[in-house]
Amino acid sequence: TIILIKVKWYHQVFPNTAIDVIIEVYADLLRSLDPGIPECIEAILKQHSTAMQLSLLLELKQITRHFAVNLQGAIETSSHGKLQNQKLLSLAQAIYAPYVPHVTKYNIYETAQLESQLQSMKSTHDDLSDTINVLSLSISRIMEYANEANKRCKLFTEGCGYPGLLKSLSSYFNKCLEKYQAAIWQLERKKVKHEDWNLFQMCLTLMQTIGDLLGQIQQFEKSLVIDITEANNKLQSTNVSVFNQYKKLLLNASSQTDLENLVLSFQKEEETILDPIIKSIHKLCSDLHRATYEVIFAPIFTQLLLVQKAPAWSMEANKITQLSADLPDYSFAPQEYITQVGQYLMTLPQHLEPFLLRENPSLTQALKAADPQYVQSSTESGFTGILLDIIAKGTCQMFLDQTLGICHLSSAACKQLATDIDYLGNVLEELGLSLSENLQHMSLLLRLSPEDYQSGSSGCSARVVAAVRQMRNLTFSG
Image (cartoon, rainbow, N blue to C red; front, side, top):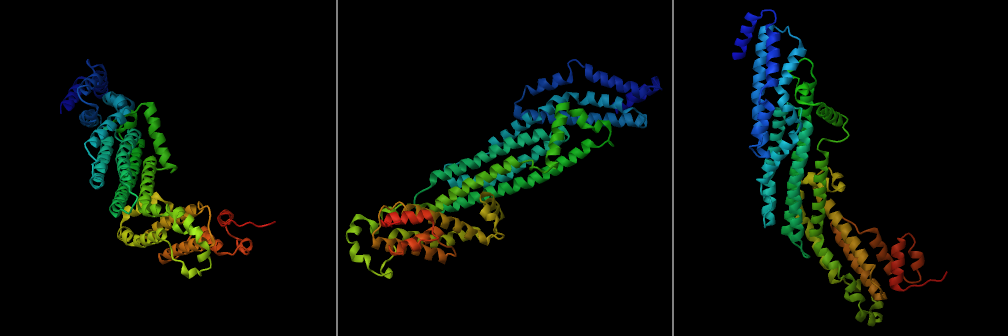
């Protein structure tokens, strides 16, 4: 109202130059205030912490925007749109000039506010299950804070500050992921050498939680791309008033270049705008998957460490080797270490299926991020088989490595080891899996007579052929 009254007064006093004069007066007045608006803003910011400064700047910016809208309306009413844009642009720049340095530093203010909000969220507890539960419940707040930051960017920078927002979000999300990494380390410290299904369930629950976070960040990223595109289209438009040409009003030359480069980067689709964060979450999933595997594999690992000390190839067994060397294969029963492994493997499906058979998109997403093998499965029901297959391969590899460390095998011991290998093969077959090729070769080589060894070993792994020959102390002439 006051602005409109002044415009009318100028129109009466200076009928031919009313609007031109008032525009120049306002522009000159805004630039020559003492103390100036920039100094006043700096003075009030110093009275508050960095985490609070963005809220103050946002409030001041909204007041300024309201003033600019009213001034624009009064000018357009009196001038009937017959003004040079250059004169209006000069006035608009004078109005918004105090905010240019603060828009340049926007990411500093935003980072401080986000980190302050994040610090209010306690995530680590002495009890691992409590930690996982809190992390699960905190996801909604993590995303709420990120969405609020996006809204602040729109309000304070009119979309000009998106390069700064992405830096702030990168820092923010990385600090969030540190909380999840800490939970994985806490889980690592809980690992034992025997079966612990409670810990295994916590592994999968944490995996599901990280998968939920991954999904929500990917969704947030999509909406962010849409917002940046829409903001850029508005900033690029030439059909708006100079009072709305915020790229010229709020950005210096360097910041304009940063914004243009940002838009070009995701238009080329070389990588997503939160790609480093997504990759970090994939790494978390991979780390947790490895820890989960180690929790599941622990009882197998413990038993297979006993392979080289098994009774069948001990010094005492070698003394009575002649007595049992001629016994038929069916006289040999698998030794305890391998039956323990087999019995444990047979219990795995019942523990895995409650997690992997029900519809669980978050766990599905985390597993696919953790290991490419899960991507090959189109249905969740296949994930049990994939995890079992990974465990089976690990079991076969460790069993092979341990057997290759046996120094000497008598004829009876050869039959015994072959029996142990075949038993593992039968267990895996029951689970819909198969024995590794190297163990199949070893079983065959252990049963070959010395006379047939050289010809019968054709097609087998050279490493296994040589190792079994040495264990059996077989020598051949040219």
